Length: 131
Length: 126
Image (cartoon, rainbow over all chains, first blue to last red; front, side, top):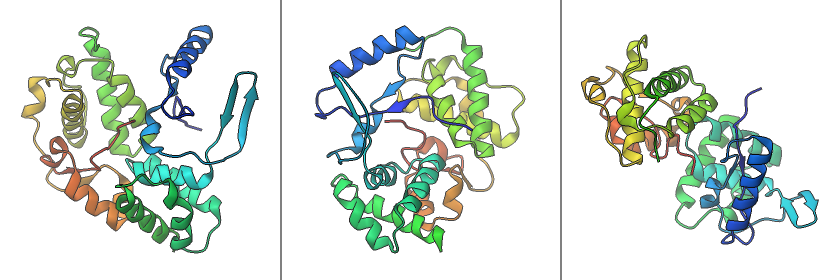
C-alpha cells in the first residue's frame, strides 16, 4: 500500500504555529525522520475547525481529527490531482448521503469564501461518478 | 536554499516524476516533486531513456517547478516541443466534465503550450 510521506496538521488556534514547528523538529531529530514530516500546507484550506474525534490526548497535547465533512471540503477545494479526487471519493462514500445537495450542506460551512464555485463543481463531478 | 550540486540525482527524480505522471501514479508524482524541490532546476540535465511523451512531460514539469520557485530553467527544456494530441495529466479529467474544463482553461503555461492539461495548482502541496 502506498501513502504520502508526511502528516498534515493545522495548529489551534490557527495562528499559533511556532511551538508545533519546534516540537516537530525535535521529534524528527530524535527519530531520524525528514524535518518536514509534519506538514502545515493544508492550513490554507482551513478557516474554521470542526469537532472531530480526539485521536491523541497526552499532557500538553490534544490532537483532533477534522470531521469527514471538513476533510471532504478541503479535498474539494484543493482538487489538484487524482490523489485528491480518490481521497474525496472515499470521504464522500463514507458520509453515506443520498444527494449532492445533502453533501454540499454538510461541507459548505468549511469551504473558504471565494472557493465555493470550485468546490461545488468538484462535488458535482464526484457525484456523477457514483451514478 | 536549493543545492547546485548532485544534479544527476535530480535528473533521476525528474525521470521518475515524468514516468509517474505518464503512468498515472499520482502519489509517486507527489513524492518526486517534493524531492525535486531540493535542487535548482537549472542544474537538472535532460533525463536519458525517456519516451517521447515522457520527455515532453519532463520538460514541461521542470519549467513549471522553476516558474513556481522563481528560478531559471536549463536550456534543454526550450528545445522540447509539445505533444501532437491533448494529454490530461489528471486522469479523472477524462471522466469529470467540470475538471476537464478547468484543466483546459487554467492549465499552467509550461504545460499548455505543450498540449498538456492540468489544474493550475497541479502537484502543489500548499
